[in-house]
Image (cartoon, rainbow, N blue to C red; front, side):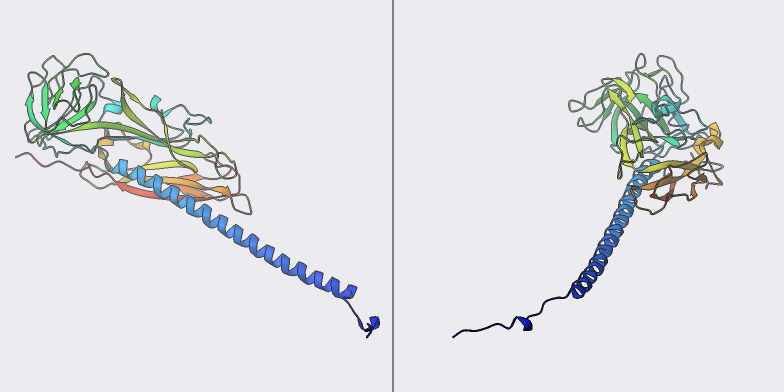
Length: 384
């Protein structure tokens, strides 16, 4: 049996129907692409904001931890009942700047105004160099490993501590204290892991001790002012750290240049006390600006917050708190327009065109700040 097909009854899409179908498909596809692009942009914004907040939290955490411990001693020193002064002795041959523990446990330097010490690096634009308009500061304190004195022979300049398993090496700078006296000195001999004896002779060294006597007041003679520390005394290693903003070792995000928070720490390198290589801690910082809370006395509350160049030399011991301001930018350019906002960073105005400026780009910027109380500021107990 033969079957026949009626070709006249077969029909397909007309040109108009195809054009309508294509137009609808284009509209739907365009909608899908817009949703995808919008979702991608939302993800980029959220990711960049999250990374910026994480960087800011870490930076402020590191700074706050060191600032809070400025001037740390494991003892509370009594005041002399006659003079009212603390009996503290710095017997190092160099007692200023990075060794001025009893005078300026924290000291700041104002970007564009102060003369920065050599350890802060010169200002420049190459990796690790200091950003000229950003602030920097130095923190002096004892570290967290506290040892007890079990015996002290002042005439032979030998201290014995409670364990031979210590981390004190020859030429380390040390802090010792009891309830009456404190001293900073350099160990002339020590054998970690072998014995518990620490020697503090005077003589040559870097910086070296001007005397073997650890008593107050300091007398830079061979025997100096005698002082025997008893079993209630404590010893810690002295640390000196500096913080500043400098050019990053790498670009970030859209290959745009960025700055970072740097730290340098004092180290004992084969018997030489020196600052180690700059450690890059956090990227994405435009500037760091700092105000210092100055009290009338070390046991008071801050009566004013001022920049470093407005703190008198003898007022650093009265600095009881520090207000840190950081201007962060996102790793990538996520804005639709070039940033032209004005930012107040701890009292310093930042714009894209002013004296304190940031690059004219499409990265978003945020100010993060924190006021940090120095725990070791406060008047010592009165002597009976």
